[in-house]
Length: 100
Image (cartoon, rainbow, N blue to C red; front, top):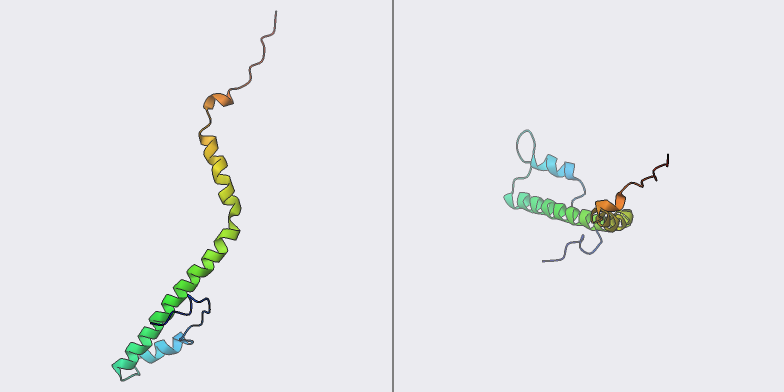
């Protein structure tokens, strides 16, 4: 089995006109293709394209997410340390009683 193009980073769909494939396979009078082998081949090609599209989306998302949210990662330790602080550390300052 040949490696998919999405895994190599050279994404190029095999099927360029999905509307034409749909029109060929589904019409008012049934499929315009007589041979079951040709239908199976078309469906297999479209399935491979869908798999490659999913892999390409995953690859692109993995490249996008780290640069977008570095500040999010730096805030986690600070938030975690706040939860471990004692509530006594936040006692209000009392003013000295005035003498009468």
